[in-house]
Image 1 (tube, helix red, strand yellow):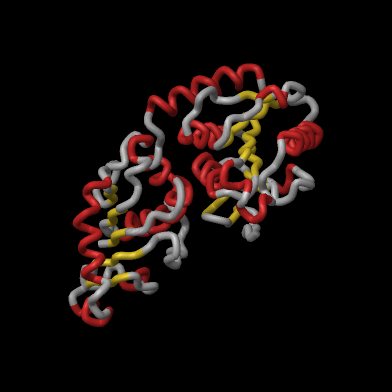
Image 2 (cartoon, helix red, strand yellow):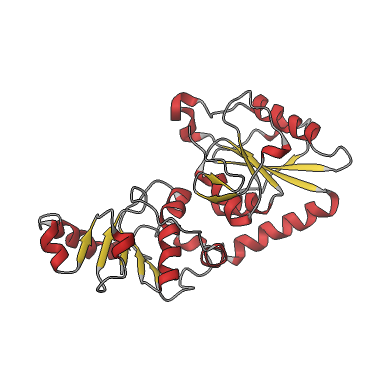
Amino acid sequence: MIILKDKPGQLCNRLWAFSPFISEALENNTKIKILHFYDYYNYFEDLNTFKSVSFIKNKKALILYNLLFKILNKIPYKFLSHLGIIYDSQNYITEANQNNKLHLINGWSQKKPNKQLKLTDLQKLFRPKDIYANRVDNIFSKKRKVNDLIIGVHIRRGDYKDYRGGKYYYSDLTIINFILQIINEFDKNKKLTFLLCSNEKINIKAYNDVPVFQINNANLIEDLYGLSKCDYIIGPPSTFSMWASFYGQKPLYFLKESTSVIKKDNFSIISKQNHFKNGHIFSH
């Protein structure tokens, strides 16, 4: 059994931290329990889809686990190993199915299983609740009747004002320039519209001269699912847009500079965190 015991950042950091181990567990018919996903539990339709994969639903249930970890921290690793407990080991991948050992690890910092993610299973497991998915589906159905392509634009604000010195904190004018680049780069005979998603309120009036729309009063799962339904996605480097690309199997282009030049051929689908299907591996 595997227990993932860390809480790495927000939703998509956790999705990327946990998904490789969930895929590995499903592949090997190994039980896995995720302790820190209760913040987002109610955004998803059925996190009990697979009997071997379970999530702590209520934070109060962590009391016993936290007590267990305090005890384990005081016990020498070799002694734990004799008891069949692997605690924070980097070797769980080769040991996970040996002698029914219990592995307690951190998903974010742990070396990930080097196998292809189980896309279909992850799409089932992390499907948004119908109330959210249906709302987004209805909006997209209407937009597709009058547009040939929908481009998702992830405008990351908030913490990105300070992250890496604000390098990826793009102004509305910069975003509009990216939108105009795409309009000029893509087939002139196709009608395009752009979905704007952000973790801050967008000044939609600033975009009056370009064809954009929002999912009004969207929560983060509606924005994430909306991005995954777009034909192409652009945005600063982020696990959020990476997950949208992977989940929806839609090409993504990272805007690494405010002066980035967008070319259609540079878009590619995410296959796993930081890895694109065209072979490109993202790094800052």
